[in-house]
Length: 222
Ligand SMILES: Cc1cc2nc3c(=O)[nH]c(=O)nc-3n(C[C@H](O)[C@H](O)[C@H](O)COP(=O)(O)OP(=O)(O)OC[C@H]3O[C@@H](n4cnc5c(N)ncnc54)[C@H](O)[C@@H]3O)c2cc1C
Image 1 (cartoon, rainbow, N blue to C red):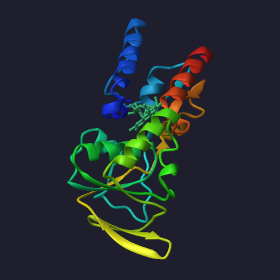
Image 2 (image 1 turned 60 degrees about the vertical axis):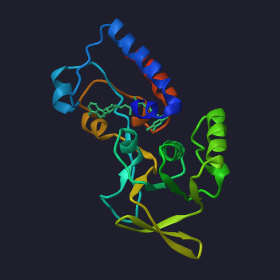
Image 3 (image 1 turned 180 degrees about the vertical axis):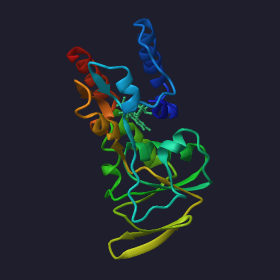
């Protein structure tokens, strides 16, 4: 939620965060910060149940690994970018990052396998998405639709659109290619604690609504 709240139009997320933090304090929950939950730490507490809410991590899906490529999550967390930027991915996080950087004065090009404006950010709530698409259409952001990444070089990407191939260059290349659930801890704990309940993005990356809803039901089950 901290990453979402970094976006200018989502600053009201801080209100939800403040409310949730207030509830935790009011209920006297023992919160251990800067603590990596692992088998040893959890075993130590001898819990009757573990509710796993380990979330998801950004997925980078490229023909080969390239350490110069950064993720949209890093950008929203404050990482500096160059003036010319390429963004890979046409989902909500890619589109919101594109708008965020364009409004900061970057020249942004989005590369996506999706086939047109009407296919962008389909993982977003309807009204917010309609407004975002309107702003994107009126923006200076360039789009390369129906594109496939063929090769990644330093500061450039070879993209194919059917028969056509072109190299696109930028100072910063940003991956916004979705996320994958963090399930390592679930695998480590299986069979070792009496009850495990997984909630939120660690089940499958979705939205805060599902995470909160599943957290509520997990609380009723233990
Ligand atoms: C840029 C962006 C914009 C978004 N916008 C929206 C939006 O507009 N509306 C919406 O509903 N959703 C939005 N989402 C999605 C939403 O933020 C997630 O669906 C939601 O935060 C999932 O909650 P969660 O508790 O499952 O996981 P998270 O919020 O990811 O929390 C998981 C936490 O567990 C920690 N963790 C992982 N492993 C361990 C471990 N072993 N020990 C201790 N801690 C650990 C992680 O560090 C993290 O702090 C957005 C996401 C992003 C990235």
